[in-house]
Length: 99
Image 1: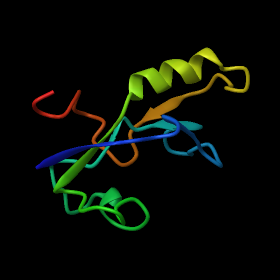
Image 2: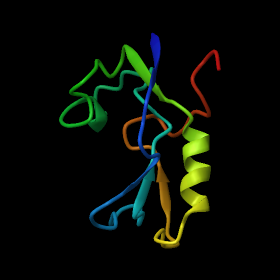
Image 3: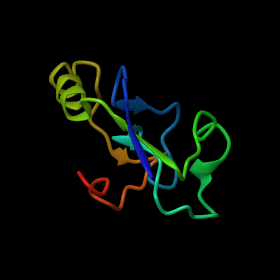
């Protein structure tokens, strides 16, 4: 497993439509990738895994906590709503091994 840092512009993504299953309007992914290699994972294909091998490399978003704090501090246009953890990472583990 390889871990690489990735520069990001923002940590919270605004969805076009509220998700009918999870009811979230925003998503937050602190990293991209996963160690589990589940064959049924939607994030392995399509638009999510085009730039890397989803099971071999995990991209950790640089200064994710700082970007989140900055975004919430200037939240004039940020409407109260549900923020869904994950999207292209495993939301069930608290951090990558070794961190």
